[in-house]
Length: 107
Image (cartoon, rainbow, N blue to C red; front, top):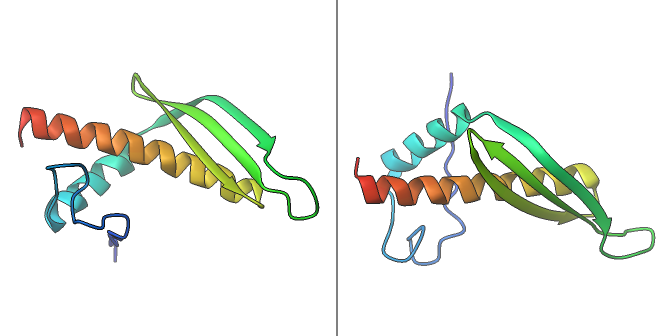
């Protein structure tokens, strides 16, 4: 069975942005829209933020989502995790901009 789990843990006041919130159905629709996005990696960089055995790597990337280029950043001691965090950061940016457009245009 297909299912989407929505974790709304980043929102202390229940709003995605000042004066803007989504109900569960709107969040599910946003997740469906994000799943349809096809991103093309435009730029990727990895640098060491610390040194030593458990050095933290910082990843920065730019992704083109159908003409909208967004950036994402992530950090971790694991380069794959840092990359995933950067990609999720970019997805969050595109989701925020999509949410704002939905609010401006209306459902």
